[in-house]
Image (cartoon, rainbow, N blue to C red; front, side, top):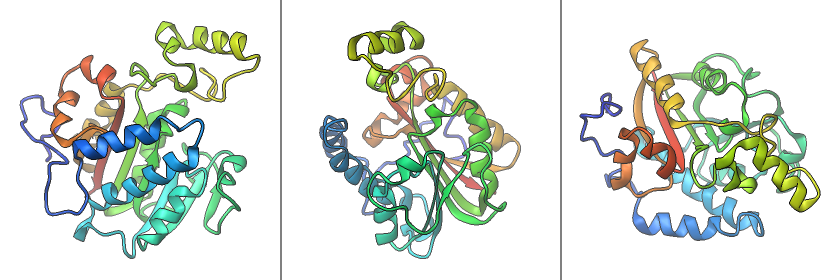
Length: 265
């Protein structure tokens, strides 16, 4: 799928193949229903997302299994993802910038690190898979974190990074949809209404991440011979909606969340 980002390509990544995991419409509806209670019942949503992530990541690995994989989760946060990946047979390492986030689902487990995603305290080429879910929009320099994820991954290993797109319906997180009128405006409005700052503060812990920037970075890695692009798709959509990523502007609004999957060369 090296021509995946070419608008002339008819490639349909995540199309049903020989895997047990499928990017079906039923899956999309199920995840959306779980997402609706993300604020009120985070355990339900993140447990479901973690289980889905195991299948989706395995879909891009050799043998379509995570058994024996050394996996680094950048921005691992609460232990929902840890439990799911370890159950799948992976050796799980997690890094987060917030110690409180790492305790969200219980005690901080062995293999957890406190650190900066833009300067990973991990040796070059030391993990089989580097995973990150909905973290990149909270990083002031996204390409620095992507570069680091690629650096620590072994040749032949997989980088899996998804993030929320700013111009989508949930781009401002709890300040949505007012973020469409400006991040700082949405932040002030939230503070006036609720009497306190939002958890995700525009300009401090949330930034305007775009699909175009992520796609440019992926193309640059491919041109430089650093990685092969396995997928660049709307993460939560059915496989047949992959075409959205080939249409500028449309992809920023309707894709909701961009998933980049690269194999380190």
